[in-house]
Amino acid sequence: MKNSKRITTLAMLAMTVTFFLAGCVPQKMSSHPKIPTGLIYGSSYKYIAVPLQHIMERIADIFGGINGYGWAIIIITFVVRMILLPLMLNQSNKMTAQQEKTRRLKPQLDIIQAQQKVATTAEEKAELSQLMMQVYKENNSSMMPSLGCLTLLIQLPIFSGLYQAIQYSPEISSSHFFGIGLGSPNIIITVIATLLYVGQSALSLIGMPAEQKKQMQTTVLMSPAITFFISLFAPAGLALYFLAGGIIMVIQQLITTFIIMPRVKQRIDLEIKENPIVTVVTKEMFTQKAGTESAATATTLDSQQANTNTTVSSRSNNQRNAGKQRHKPQA
Image (cartoon, rainbow, N blue to C red):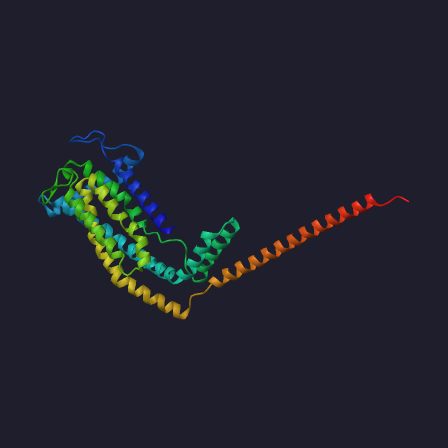
Protein backbone atom coordinates (compact mmCIF):
# COMPACT_ATOMS: atom_id res chain seq x y z
CA MET A 1 0.00 0.00 0.00
CA LYS A 2 2.78 2.43 0.95
CA ASN A 3 4.63 1.52 -2.24
CA SER A 4 1.60 2.31 -4.41
CA LYS A 5 1.14 5.64 -2.62
CA ARG A 6 4.75 6.60 -3.35
CA ILE A 7 4.34 5.67 -7.01
CA THR A 8 1.15 7.72 -7.23
CA THR A 9 2.85 10.70 -5.58
CA LEU A 10 5.82 10.58 -7.95
CA ALA A 11 3.51 10.22 -10.95
CA MET A 12 1.57 13.29 -9.83
CA LEU A 13 4.82 15.21 -9.45
CA ALA A 14 5.83 14.17 -12.97
CA MET A 15 2.53 15.47 -14.32
CA THR A 16 2.99 18.70 -12.33
CA VAL A 17 6.44 19.24 -13.82
CA THR A 18 5.06 18.51 -17.28
CA PHE A 19 2.27 21.03 -16.65
CA PHE A 20 4.78 23.71 -15.67
CA LEU A 21 6.97 23.06 -18.67
CA ALA A 22 4.13 22.63 -21.15
CA GLY A 23 2.94 26.16 -20.47
CA CYS A 24 6.38 27.45 -21.31
CA VAL A 25 6.46 25.96 -24.79
CA PRO A 26 5.62 28.57 -27.43
CA GLN A 27 2.70 27.78 -29.64
CA LYS A 28 4.60 28.81 -32.74
CA MET A 29 8.25 27.88 -32.85
CA SER A 30 10.18 30.82 -34.23
CA SER A 31 13.47 32.63 -33.69
CA HIS A 32 11.63 35.06 -31.40
CA PRO A 33 8.94 33.20 -29.42
CA LYS A 34 6.27 35.31 -27.78
CA ILE A 35 6.90 36.18 -24.13
CA PRO A 36 4.21 34.64 -21.85
CA THR A 37 1.83 37.15 -20.28
CA GLY A 38 -0.68 34.99 -18.38
CA LEU A 39 -1.07 35.02 -14.62
CA ILE A 40 0.84 31.79 -13.93
CA TYR A 41 3.40 31.60 -16.74
CA GLY A 42 3.68 35.36 -17.12
CA SER A 43 4.46 35.75 -13.41
CA SER A 44 6.89 32.83 -13.57
CA TYR A 45 8.71 34.49 -16.44
CA LYS A 46 8.76 37.94 -14.85
CA TYR A 47 9.82 36.98 -11.32
CA ILE A 48 11.90 33.83 -11.91
CA ALA A 49 13.03 33.50 -15.53
CA VAL A 50 14.15 37.11 -16.04
CA PRO A 51 16.30 37.19 -12.86
CA LEU A 52 17.79 33.82 -13.88
CA GLN A 53 18.59 35.25 -17.31
CA HIS A 54 20.46 38.16 -15.72
CA ILE A 55 22.36 35.84 -13.37
CA MET A 56 23.36 33.52 -16.22
CA GLU A 57 24.46 36.47 -18.34
CA ARG A 58 26.68 37.75 -15.52
CA ILE A 59 28.23 34.33 -14.92
CA ALA A 60 28.70 33.76 -18.67
CA ASP A 61 30.51 37.12 -18.92
CA ILE A 62 32.84 36.05 -16.10
CA PHE A 63 33.72 32.77 -17.80
CA GLY A 64 33.66 34.16 -21.31
CA GLY A 65 33.85 32.02 -24.44
CA ILE A 66 31.13 29.95 -26.09
CA ASN A 67 30.70 27.66 -23.08
CA GLY A 68 29.87 30.46 -20.65
CA TYR A 69 26.11 29.85 -20.44
CA GLY A 70 26.62 26.12 -19.90
CA TRP A 71 28.90 26.82 -16.94
CA ALA A 72 26.35 29.33 -15.67
CA ILE A 73 23.65 26.63 -15.60
CA ILE A 74 26.00 24.24 -13.77
CA ILE A 75 26.87 26.88 -11.15
CA ILE A 76 23.18 27.72 -10.61
CA THR A 77 22.50 24.00 -10.17
CA PHE A 78 25.33 23.72 -7.65
CA VAL A 79 24.06 26.71 -5.64
CA VAL A 80 20.46 25.41 -5.59
CA ARG A 81 21.60 21.93 -4.54
CA MET A 82 23.89 23.30 -1.83
CA ILE A 83 20.98 25.32 -0.42
CA LEU A 84 18.79 22.21 -0.43
CA LEU A 85 21.52 19.84 0.80
CA PRO A 86 20.86 20.27 4.55
CA LEU A 87 17.14 19.64 3.99
CA MET A 88 17.83 16.62 1.78
CA LEU A 89 20.30 15.09 4.26
CA ASN A 90 17.86 15.72 7.10
CA GLN A 91 15.12 13.96 5.13
CA SER A 92 17.48 11.06 4.41
CA ASN A 93 18.28 10.82 8.12
CA LYS A 94 14.61 10.78 9.14
CA MET A 95 13.63 8.37 6.37
CA THR A 96 16.41 5.94 7.30
CA ALA A 97 15.45 6.09 10.98
CA GLN A 98 11.80 5.48 10.13
CA GLN A 99 12.67 2.54 7.88
CA GLU A 100 14.82 1.00 10.64
CA LYS A 101 12.07 1.38 13.25
CA THR A 102 9.49 -0.04 10.87
CA ARG A 103 11.76 -3.02 10.19
CA ARG A 104 11.93 -3.73 13.94
CA LEU A 105 8.14 -3.49 14.18
CA LYS A 106 7.58 -5.69 11.13
CA PRO A 107 6.74 -8.92 13.05
CA GLN A 108 3.82 -7.18 14.78
CA LEU A 109 2.76 -5.34 11.63
CA ASP A 110 2.74 -8.61 9.66
CA ILE A 111 0.37 -10.15 12.22
CA ILE A 112 -2.05 -7.23 11.90
CA GLN A 113 -1.85 -7.17 8.09
CA ALA A 114 -2.57 -10.91 7.97
CA GLN A 115 -5.66 -10.35 10.10
CA GLN A 116 -6.74 -7.43 7.89
CA LYS A 117 -6.82 -9.77 4.89
CA VAL A 118 -9.33 -12.08 6.58
CA ALA A 119 -11.36 -9.40 8.37
CA THR A 120 -14.95 -9.37 7.14
CA THR A 121 -16.67 -6.57 9.05
CA ALA A 122 -16.03 -2.83 9.22
CA GLU A 123 -15.69 -3.10 13.00
CA GLU A 124 -12.91 -5.69 12.70
CA LYS A 125 -11.03 -3.60 10.13
CA ALA A 126 -11.34 -0.46 12.27
CA GLU A 127 -10.10 -2.35 15.33
CA LEU A 128 -7.08 -3.66 13.41
CA SER A 129 -6.27 -0.17 12.13
CA GLN A 130 -6.37 1.12 15.70
CA LEU A 131 -4.04 -1.70 16.75
CA MET A 132 -1.57 -0.77 14.01
CA MET A 133 -1.60 2.87 15.11
CA GLN A 134 -1.03 1.71 18.67
CA VAL A 135 2.00 -0.36 17.62
CA TYR A 136 3.60 2.74 16.09
CA LYS A 137 2.58 5.02 18.96
CA GLU A 138 3.84 2.74 21.74
CA ASN A 139 7.21 2.53 20.01
CA ASN A 140 7.58 6.27 19.28
CA SER A 141 7.25 5.82 15.54
CA SER A 142 4.90 7.14 12.88
CA MET A 143 2.75 5.66 10.13
CA MET A 144 3.20 8.80 8.01
CA PRO A 145 6.08 8.55 5.52
CA SER A 146 8.71 11.28 5.30
CA LEU A 147 8.16 13.94 2.67
CA GLY A 148 10.84 12.64 0.32
CA CYS A 149 9.41 14.65 -2.60
CA LEU A 150 9.54 18.01 -0.81
CA THR A 151 12.84 18.99 -2.43
CA LEU A 152 11.41 18.25 -5.88
CA LEU A 153 8.42 20.49 -5.14
CA ILE A 154 10.76 23.28 -4.02
CA GLN A 155 12.65 22.99 -7.31
CA LEU A 156 9.56 23.23 -9.52
CA PRO A 157 9.76 27.05 -9.81
CA ILE A 158 13.45 26.68 -10.75
CA PHE A 159 12.54 24.13 -13.45
CA SER A 160 9.93 26.42 -14.93
CA GLY A 161 12.07 29.56 -14.63
CA LEU A 162 15.16 27.95 -16.15
CA TYR A 163 13.09 26.54 -19.02
CA GLN A 164 11.67 29.98 -19.76
CA ALA A 165 15.04 31.69 -19.32
CA ILE A 166 16.54 29.45 -22.00
CA GLN A 167 13.49 29.43 -24.29
CA TYR A 168 12.89 33.18 -24.40
CA SER A 169 16.48 34.43 -24.38
CA PRO A 170 18.00 34.51 -27.89
CA GLU A 171 21.51 34.61 -26.41
CA ILE A 172 21.04 31.56 -24.16
CA SER A 173 18.94 29.48 -26.58
CA SER A 174 21.50 29.95 -29.35
CA SER A 175 24.52 29.26 -27.12
CA HIS A 176 26.50 26.01 -26.99
CA PHE A 177 28.25 23.94 -24.35
CA PHE A 178 31.11 21.90 -25.81
CA GLY A 179 29.32 21.76 -29.14
CA ILE A 180 25.86 20.95 -27.74
CA GLY A 181 23.13 23.51 -28.44
CA LEU A 182 21.45 24.53 -25.18
CA GLY A 183 18.21 25.67 -26.83
CA SER A 184 17.10 22.31 -28.27
CA PRO A 185 16.80 18.76 -26.88
CA ASN A 186 19.92 16.62 -26.86
CA ILE A 187 19.92 12.85 -26.46
CA ILE A 188 23.50 12.66 -25.14
CA ILE A 189 22.84 14.87 -22.11
CA THR A 190 19.48 13.13 -21.63
CA VAL A 191 21.08 9.67 -21.45
CA ILE A 192 23.92 10.78 -19.16
CA ALA A 193 21.52 12.56 -16.79
CA THR A 194 19.22 9.52 -16.71
CA LEU A 195 22.11 7.13 -16.00
CA LEU A 196 23.23 9.31 -13.09
CA TYR A 197 19.78 9.03 -11.51
CA VAL A 198 19.75 5.28 -12.18
CA GLY A 199 23.05 5.07 -10.30
CA GLN A 200 21.67 7.16 -7.45
CA SER A 201 18.61 4.91 -7.25
CA ALA A 202 20.78 1.77 -7.22
CA LEU A 203 22.88 3.20 -4.38
CA SER A 204 19.72 3.89 -2.38
CA LEU A 205 18.93 0.14 -2.36
CA ILE A 206 22.23 -0.84 -0.75
CA GLY A 207 21.78 -2.07 2.80
CA MET A 208 18.03 -2.62 2.49
CA PRO A 209 16.47 -5.96 3.48
CA ALA A 210 15.66 -8.16 0.47
CA GLU A 211 11.89 -7.85 0.95
CA GLN A 212 11.99 -4.05 1.25
CA LYS A 213 14.38 -3.83 -1.70
CA LYS A 214 11.90 -5.78 -3.83
CA GLN A 215 9.09 -3.41 -2.83
CA MET A 216 11.19 -0.32 -3.64
CA GLN A 217 12.42 -1.42 -7.08
CA THR A 218 9.49 0.13 -8.93
CA THR A 219 9.58 3.32 -6.86
CA VAL A 220 13.28 4.04 -7.37
CA LEU A 221 12.89 3.79 -11.14
CA MET A 222 10.41 6.67 -11.15
CA SER A 223 13.10 9.33 -10.65
CA PRO A 224 15.21 8.23 -13.68
CA ALA A 225 12.01 7.87 -15.72
CA ILE A 226 10.90 11.41 -14.88
CA THR A 227 14.39 12.74 -15.67
CA PHE A 228 14.45 10.96 -19.03
CA PHE A 229 10.93 12.05 -20.01
CA ILE A 230 11.51 15.74 -19.23
CA SER A 231 15.06 15.91 -20.63
CA LEU A 232 14.03 14.18 -23.85
CA PHE A 233 11.70 17.03 -24.84
CA ALA A 234 13.14 20.00 -22.92
CA PRO A 235 16.01 22.21 -24.10
CA ALA A 236 19.46 20.76 -23.43
CA GLY A 237 20.07 23.61 -20.98
CA LEU A 238 17.41 22.18 -18.65
CA ALA A 239 18.75 18.65 -19.19
CA LEU A 240 22.17 20.03 -18.20
CA TYR A 241 20.56 21.18 -14.94
CA PHE A 242 19.42 17.58 -14.35
CA LEU A 243 22.86 16.24 -15.28
CA ALA A 244 24.70 18.52 -12.85
CA GLY A 245 22.06 17.83 -10.21
CA GLY A 246 22.46 14.10 -10.80
CA ILE A 247 26.18 14.29 -9.99
CA ILE A 248 25.38 16.00 -6.68
CA MET A 249 22.58 13.48 -6.00
CA VAL A 250 25.04 10.59 -6.43
CA ILE A 251 27.44 12.24 -3.97
CA GLN A 252 24.58 12.84 -1.53
CA GLN A 253 23.44 9.21 -1.85
CA LEU A 254 26.98 7.99 -1.17
CA ILE A 255 26.97 10.06 2.03
CA THR A 256 23.54 8.68 2.96
CA THR A 257 24.34 5.03 2.21
CA PHE A 258 27.81 4.76 3.72
CA ILE A 259 27.77 7.40 6.48
CA ILE A 260 24.22 8.29 7.55
CA MET A 261 22.67 4.80 7.37
CA PRO A 262 25.31 3.03 9.53
CA ARG A 263 25.10 5.83 12.13
CA VAL A 264 21.31 5.75 12.21
CA LYS A 265 21.27 1.95 12.56
CA GLN A 266 23.75 2.19 15.42
CA ARG A 267 21.64 4.87 17.10
CA ILE A 268 18.44 2.82 16.72
CA ASP A 269 20.21 -0.23 18.19
CA LEU A 270 21.21 1.80 21.25
CA GLU A 271 17.68 3.19 21.61
CA ILE A 272 16.20 -0.31 21.50
CA LYS A 273 18.66 -1.54 24.12
CA GLU A 274 17.57 1.27 26.44
CA ASN A 275 13.90 1.11 25.44
CA PRO A 276 13.03 -2.36 24.07
CA ILE A 277 10.30 -2.78 21.47
CA VAL A 278 6.87 -2.71 23.09
CA THR A 279 4.83 -5.76 22.12
CA VAL A 280 1.27 -4.70 21.39
CA VAL A 281 0.02 -7.68 19.39
CA THR A 282 0.94 -11.37 19.24
CA LYS A 283 -0.36 -14.35 17.28
CA GLU A 284 -1.69 -15.83 20.53
CA MET A 285 -4.01 -12.82 20.98
CA PHE A 286 -5.85 -13.58 17.76
CA THR A 287 -5.72 -17.35 18.32
CA GLN A 288 -7.34 -16.97 21.76
CA LYS A 289 -9.85 -14.51 20.36
CA ALA A 290 -10.75 -16.92 17.55
CA GLY A 291 -11.13 -19.75 20.08
CA THR A 292 -13.35 -17.63 22.32
CA GLU A 293 -15.50 -16.58 19.38
CA SER A 294 -15.79 -20.22 18.22
CA ALA A 295 -16.81 -21.34 21.71
CA ALA A 296 -19.35 -18.52 21.93
CA THR A 297 -20.70 -19.44 18.51
CA ALA A 298 -20.95 -23.11 19.49
CA THR A 299 -22.75 -22.19 22.73
CA THR A 300 -25.18 -20.01 20.80
CA LEU A 301 -25.85 -22.79 18.30
CA ASP A 302 -26.37 -25.32 21.11
CA SER A 303 -28.75 -22.93 22.82
CA GLN A 304 -30.65 -22.36 19.59
CA GLN A 305 -30.81 -26.12 18.98
CA ALA A 306 -32.05 -26.74 22.53
CA ASN A 307 -34.72 -24.07 22.09
CA THR A 308 -35.73 -25.64 18.80
CA ASN A 309 -35.96 -29.09 20.37
CA THR A 310 -38.00 -27.70 23.27
CA THR A 311 -40.36 -25.98 20.86
CA VAL A 312 -40.79 -29.13 18.78
CA SER A 313 -41.36 -31.26 21.91
CA SER A 314 -43.89 -28.76 23.22
CA ARG A 315 -45.76 -28.78 19.93
CA SER A 316 -45.81 -32.59 19.91
CA ASN A 317 -47.19 -32.71 23.44
CA ASN A 318 -49.84 -30.16 22.57
CA GLN A 319 -50.84 -32.18 19.53
CA ARG A 320 -51.11 -35.41 21.60
CA ASN A 321 -53.20 -33.67 24.27
CA ALA A 322 -55.48 -32.26 21.63
CA GLY A 323 -55.92 -35.75 20.15
CA LYS A 324 -56.82 -37.22 23.53
CA GLN A 325 -59.39 -34.51 24.05
CA ARG A 326 -61.02 -35.28 20.69
CA HIS A 327 -61.15 -39.05 21.34
CA LYS A 328 -62.34 -38.85 25.01
CA PRO A 329 -65.70 -40.79 25.38
CA GLN A 330 -68.72 -38.77 26.43
CA ALA A 331 -70.44 -39.68 29.74
